[in-house]
Length: 536
Ligand code: OOB
Image 1 (cartoon, rainbow, N blue to C red):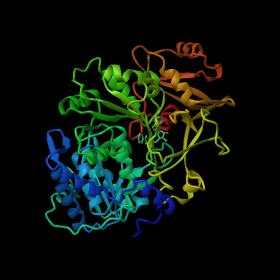
Image 2 (cartoon, rainbow, N blue to C red):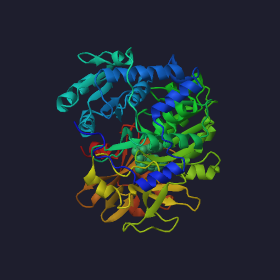
Image 3 (cartoon, helix red, strand yellow):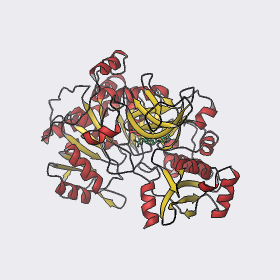
Image 4 (tube, rainbow, N blue to C red):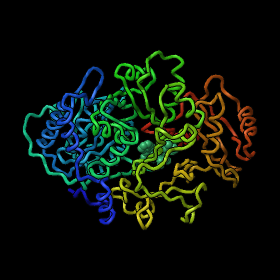
């Protein structure tokens, strides 16, 4: 069995000292924060799921039972538990119970399938897997069976719902033994996030108690979150954005309430906002767009919603401008990454900044560099690759030495692969991805630029520009579009783009019309899957 710190890249001692001195790293564990919440607000609602409600005291007791249940199975501090549950209170209880037992949860998304889970269980050296029995038509016990057959160290499968041949999660959650709780070092790994990349298999991102609590608390502060806030968990809870930006952990740190939904359709999400008085939530751009459109036909009262966080992919300016008039909430653009760095527009930023930038760094100690292909810093306002280092940004992926040599500079900056411009105010505008370029007969076209123009067309709801192989040009340019209302034709679109002043070589060679585009586990448009579909 491997030690959990093998393959972990910690922050250099001198920097760690500075982050502690600045008060960012407080030497507390995530489990301490829940314990503390139970003392400060014992009867306040911590978690809500349909008609189920758990107070802070009840949550703390449930977390104790879960920790004892995991210890009773023989799960030791430092061992890894792959957690793959839909949005529900059990997600939070098992996450926090694992932390209290000193175990390290690996936060997988419900959309991950066998190849990903097998890989993540293998690389992390997991001893347990926690899944639901089924969600919709998908049977997770079947997935668990194949993963366990392929990963010999995986001793336990715990199932929420009907366990079949496995152990029921309820046995662990109802444990009546008193456990000796381990003493956890706050600078040690708390949990492993999964990278959001759309190329290759996902990588593991080790976040410590110190850095992740800072991430959650500083985000809560930027959102002016208090104990009267009600946070709606709309995105998959295991993703960094709804988990800690400020998300579930930021809300629990200030005594607020988290409401879980497992279906973020406007009908279901709006009903939850209305019923529970939701004040804040986080969504990806396609969902923001859909919610805005749905205000035309949905009747629910959304008046409690004060802040809509949108991030994960570029939000088109036209969509950004719809948020306040349609939903009545302030928009906050969030440009973040599981690797660390978070940028937020501030609540008091002018509308223009909120609608046209992706925010500025969360921490005064976030270091941001924008560099050209040679790694040389470019002048303010010029496009380049974003490199970053700071108090909650990793120094290396977990157990990935070879990849780390490329993904990080020698002095520890993470190479994000994102193309940005930084304004004199510090706000960043995301202009694309380093590799998201279509090479059409030698001319390079940035996908993001074309998409921005396509989304400005009133009959375009979602758009993705992708390269398709072409014998003459090498690549040709395809605009995949989900129309809003009557579908535009290729020649209409070309005329529209040309009228916006776009160069002729950037005009699409073909249009693919679809009712929906393939998405990643968290709901971003998945171009790799789209190209595979279009070339099949
Ligand atoms: C969030 O995290 P990940 O790890 O799923 O994805 C990170 C990548 C970024 O490197 C960037 O390429 C893209 O997603 N991205 C954005 C964006 N926010 C993320 N691109 C353009 N505009 C934005 N606003 O996606 C994530 C993590 C925490 C908070 C919010 C998002």
